[in-house]
Length: 127
Image (cartoon, rainbow, N blue to C red; front, side, top):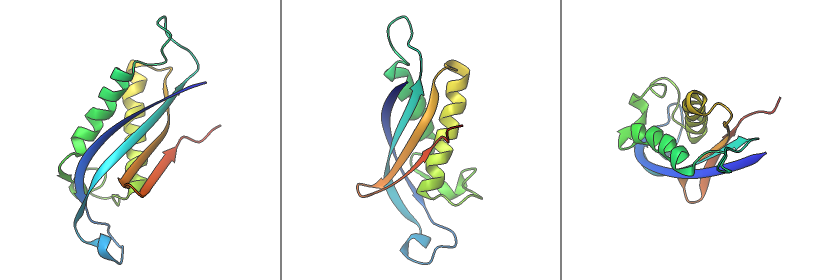
């Protein structure tokens, strides 16, 4: 199994609903997103997927969130825009994009850093 990882970033604001503390108020982050995909096979060039292509897919997703108020963007208009929920959302969106273009490449894990000391990951369950 081959694993490939790319990074992208975006800046946005959010407020955590139902949270008691500073994060219940509007605040922003410079998010860093790491996406790891997996594949068993390689193409004729010896690549699982071109890093350039994978980065462009992740960049497209991050651009939709960049300089936005996450609480106003579906699904976060209803779903709390936590780092955990962002990681899962980005993983699912990336997988949707990959299945149309490169169906043998699957999302393995997406990690969202909200600061240099705090991150949340979502990983596909095996089996």
